[in-house]
Image 1 (tube, helix red, strand yellow):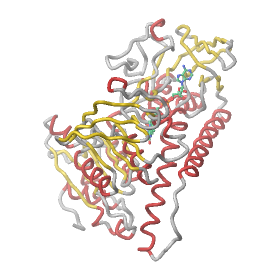
Image 2 (image 1 turned 180 degrees about the vertical axis):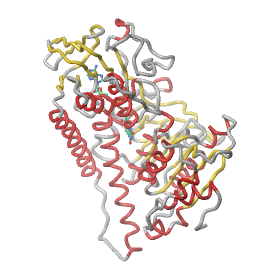
Image 3 (image 1 turned 90 degrees about the vertical axis):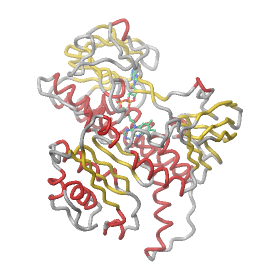
Image 4 (image 1 turned 30 degrees about the vertical axis):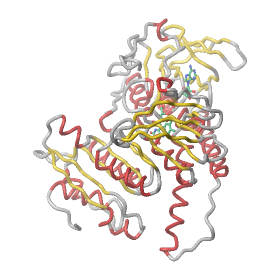
Amino acid sequence: MASFDVIFLGGGPAGYVGAIRCAQLGLNTAVVEREGLGGTCVLWGCIPAKALLEAGHIADRLKHAPEFGVTPGEVKLDFGVAMKRSRAVSSQNSKGVEFLFKKNKITWIRGTAKLAGKNSVSVKTADGKEEKHDAKKAVVISTGSRVKGLPQIGLELNKKTVISSDEALILEKAPKSIIIVGAGAVGSEFADVFNAFGSQVTLVEVMPSVLPVEDADSSKEVERSFRKRGIAVLTGAKISSVKVGRDSVSMSIEAGGEKKDYKSDIVLVAAGRAPNVEDIGLKEQGVQLTDRGFIKIDKKMQTSVPGIYAIGDVIDGPMLAHKASEDGVACVETLAGQKGHVDWDLVPSVIYTQPEVAWVGKTEEQLKAAGVAYKVGKYPFLADPRSRANAATEGFAKVLADKATDEVLGVHIIGAEAGTMIAEAAMAMEFKASAEDVGRVCHAHPTVNEALKEAALAAWEKPIHL
Ligand SMILES: Cc1cc2nc3c(=O)[nH]c(=O)nc-3n(C[C@H](O)[C@H](O)[C@H](O)COP(=O)(O)OP(=O)(O)OC[C@H]3O[C@@H](n4cnc5c(N)ncnc54)[C@H](O)[C@@H]3O)c2cc1C
């Protein structure tokens, strides 16, 4: 038995970042992690998925290369090589977290953790031994989330023909055909990956549009871009008559008033994730859940049991790595007597498709529903000099500002570098900037960020270059 100030259950972006900040604040910290450090993000999510997406992006750039006077040899795509690299990047990042643990003198307890009391955690190690550890100040639950299938429509995950993102990230070759169920961030990104590697992709979404939570303008633009690249997109779709075979899956899909039969080698279910709340002793300790099955917390991220906290995907809010990490930092800063704070309304979202989609703050649909009077400033990348120089003119930047005060309420960007650009918008909104403020900031020329400046000017008064 060892004794610590704080023990984290789970070493994903919530737990590992929280632990580093905790150690920086002088607390004796341990993290129980049963797999590798870095969690879903590093091992099965953000990092390996982006490494694969980059292969597709490179191939796409090479297609445009002759326009720039650069004519490469025959472009060949090797899924096996891209996958091997993706796994290597993932384990390199995980080792990086391990290095940071050593640097900050954080103890990694390898095993599966369970709450054993308000200040105590039991751990089952890989060799079956049971250990107990004390957490004098707090236990922080950061057990994250896991993939889920759709058994209710016959799509139970079998890891072979019906797979989740976990299996998609270790496939040895790209399937000839794939049906992806769910056109949120994960489904849309994999549609991009498999399309780039030559699979015949059908993307199916039950809601009326792809990326259903994003601003309607961006969703439409992504759908258009997907269709242009040969991805079959079925929205407002209803799946029935699913038959799962050994080497293929067939189903009927009704969309756009038409019902048709579809068959593919693989079905990838990307219909959301479930919080890891089972078998960690929540009920025994009296930790309550919300109606949606996440751990209930208060403003300090404390659960219904004093001394037990929860952060990241296991609590409500956007299921994103950077949000999970900010939860971790805010939670331990509060524990250490500081004023920890995260504004979940200002968590930027990025979807790393081609083109990328990024947003922060409110959508037009949300502002309309809330009865807020707003102004819209929109600027296409086609009008942006750097984007034209880069032959990356798809998409636009859109700024939504309060009609009365000019405060920026939402920014939506779809374009080659939207994911990088959105940080400027998040920063502006964090400081409650007006559209005029953003429009008057001197932006370096020529940079793609000038499109955001112009969109802000358009929301305030008038853009210069349109
Ligand atoms: C394919 C995919 C792509 C994604 N891409 C992005 C992206 O581009 N950007 C982004 O922001 N987010 C992305 N996400 C989401 C992101 O990965 C999660 O939001 C983030 O990892 C949540 O962090 P977390 O620490 O709360 O949980 P997790 O990362 O899930 O970590 C929880 C950890 O706890 C461990 N654990 C669970 N139970 C126990 C136990 N009882 N004992 C010991 N250890 C335990 C698990 O092994 C895991 O390592 C993606 C997700 C997927 C699936």
